[in-house]
Image (cartoon, one colour):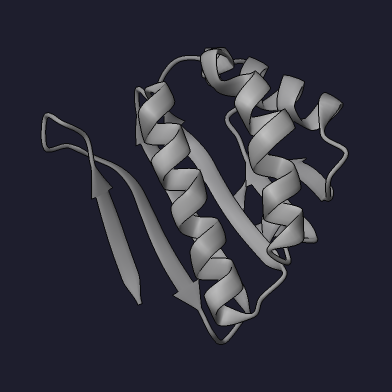
Length: 127
């Protein structure tokens, strides 16, 4: 099952896929992310994770444009603990090195304690 989330301008900013074969939730973030987009999207894929009974997320951020530091406090202090309570144990984040979005990803990775996360620069290794 695949679900798309669109911004107020009608552009897709997140695609969420429940991958039953690999037993993970696949997320594909795109464009410039607002704080509201991040909250809605992150909650949606944790709901999908809990509903499926999985413990893994494959999170592709290679198409994100710009940093998302504006949401870091919420992601680390509210979302991550609730995601762990919903069953999230393993989080693979695919990034594009040396971008503004990647600096946010690195901050997230360095400060995260709620579950195990790893950063990758390609899909094959993340899978």
